Image 1 (cartoon, helix red, strand yellow):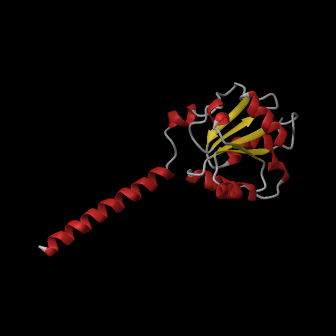
Image 2: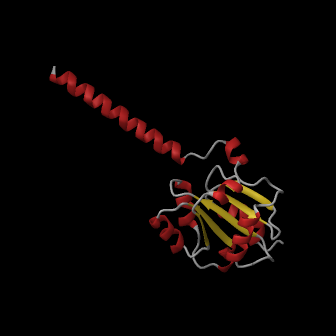
Image 3: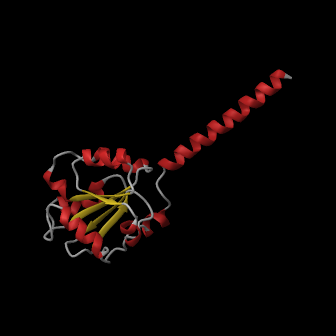
Length: 168
C-alpha cells in the first residue's frame, strides 16, 4: 500500500516536472510567424508621433539618421539575450533606443546599466500605439518615422545592418 502511494506521488511529481520543462521550452521558442509579422507598426508606415519624438530626443542622430527602436519586456528570455548582447560603448550603436513597458526597478536598472537610451512606457500607450504584440521587436526607422525593417529577434544587427554599414 505504501509503495503504491509512493509510486503515485513520484508519478505526479514527474508530470509536474515535465510540464515545467515544456513551459520553459515554449518560452524559448520564437513566436509563430503570423504573430511575429503582425507585431509592430507596418512596414512603410510611420511610427506614432509621440514615440518618434521621444526616440529622436534620445538618439544620437536626432533627425538626420535612421534609428533602431527595440521593444523589450522583462518576462521575455530573448529580450534578456538582446540586452546582454548589446556591445558596450560603440558609438555606432548609440542609435539604438530601448523601449520597456512597465519595468520593475531591477529590470530598469539592468537596462540602464547597458548605457543605451531608454524610454519607459509606464501606461503601455507607446506599445499599444505602435502595435507591439511580440518581443523583442526591433524596428529600423528612418528620420521621418517610416518603418524600413522590423523583426522579432534578439539580434539587433539583423535589422540594423544597412544603417551600420554606412548606407543612407
